[in-house]
Image 1 (cartoon, rainbow, N blue to C red):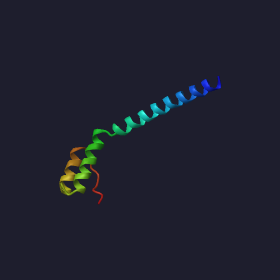
Image 2 (cartoon, rainbow, N blue to C red; image 1 turned 90 degrees about the vertical axis):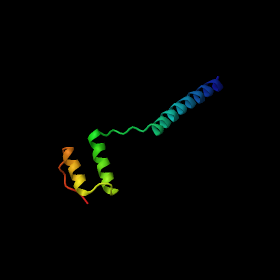
Image 3 (spheres, helix red, strand yellow; image 1 turned 30 degrees about the vertical axis):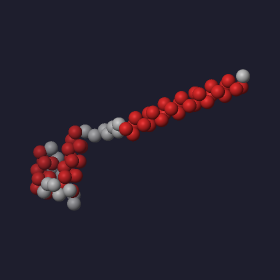
Image 4 (cartoon, rainbow, N blue to C red; image 1 turned 90 degrees about the horizontal axis):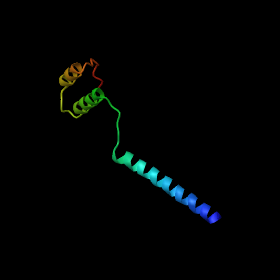
Length: 74
């Protein structure tokens, strides 16, 4: 009887571990970011400016077009 109980605990524990591993794997394969379109656009602008793809004037013009009149932080 004790052997059956131990077997049930091991099977249940294995199933729980398998489900948790699948949830973790899905999270790693399909990451989900919660950013608005506005945040993504500003991040892209910052990245392009930092890489030298756009000038300071272009960066500020694009920020203004997005409705953000923030100062350039260099």
